[in-house]
Length: 613
Ligand code: M6R
Image (cartoon, rainbow, N blue to C red):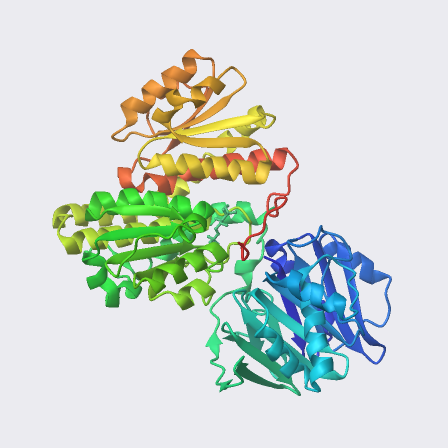
């Protein structure tokens, strides 16, 4: 969480930084700030609220021309969102300014020590402690700022991506990372630093991903990278493949709507070059070297958070059905702290859109230390998880900017489905003719998703009726149980309506007590092996006067006679239904949130990439 941007070169830094902060606003939007350096000095400007508030504030300021600058958009951890807690933070003597993304866990001890030495603090942030700690080392060791940073990094505990400016060095930026991402764009005699590549892509497609425990110094147009042990490393330049249009709204009112509608293409992109049903080919490059381990694993453990965890639950059904290997699906935040029993016979799949989720990263480190093989399923190319796992497959959904995950979910399921089919085929648990049949059906999914999207107008009408509901229940069974969880999460995170997902049969063990004429219940009741049972569950809700919104297979006549509203989706193989049945649930939550006047792309209290515990 928190987005950081910095620039040094020959251009005016401020517009580059402001534009970059807007692109990173999905990472946090509690406050924003910049620091600029010119003959008038090193000046910090910061404001509570969105980047647009900062922009308004800057309209009344003078002397903003600067060839170097740093900027920050905050997701508050230590201290409430206000002007003072906003970044950048100054050192006591205003000689240095710093932006920080992450959390310094031992900030309390450091702060007490600094207070005893006479330092004063204005904010409640760990970041102000961090810069003053660096300042103290600088003042007492007669060393360069770069050296002071290096020494400080040996003492701080926690996660950080930082960028510092020094009033005395107008052509120098110093940056470092551990646990929080930092990308350096290499232009023509200019450098762009940011939490991800989106602020950079407009200027250059050459980037260096800083690694943990590395310090980058950009001085006088040159980039030097050293480890915190002071060993120089060779910056490896990667070519970005992202297109600028992929990070713009492209005529849609919200990124979320654009991303929902992009799914036929994003699922096809995910399968492109991997699935060739006609020739019975399914190739996942990342699996090649690890197929043996995968095939012979005693157990598959899937770890993830939020929506990615829901994709993991779908995968549990897929792997167990097709490959007959036991699967456990773990919340990364629980897994990492409960001393799990692991061995080198375990195959771990870590799923993450951002590739930066702190809990998932920690779960990976733990599993790695026990000798397990870790496979990443991530969307953001070059992010931390793909760089720390043994192997992996990208989802290729393209940048997902809306905080509510949509196209990343279906792309994750697409990759996991291909993995399960491949594994089943290789293990002989999935006979060849059935395998071929499934590959052919999988190829039709993008066009079926396209068809499902056409229910949008009807869903818009349903949303009108239920936008003021205070609670919602989402019920599904089998492959549609994780979809029910995902539908409920989508609704609560963007519309702030309380919603719960349950396996439909669990309803009678408690949640049924909630049902009355005020309670909308969304059933995912597609024609599959548990259809008849779900129909009985629908009857139970109807008998108690609950309002029924049912997602059904095209042509269904039974549920149509019971439900208050039906949303039809195309038929497919039971195992592939989640790729389609989630679409109307995404649309329903989107329309309800818009009608309630909520900020769909940047819901309150949330951030796209959760890089703190
Ligand atoms: O980037 P990740 O997939 O690791 O993120 C995990 C969750 O934070 C994320 O899915 C979150 O639940 C979304 N806001 C859901 O829409």
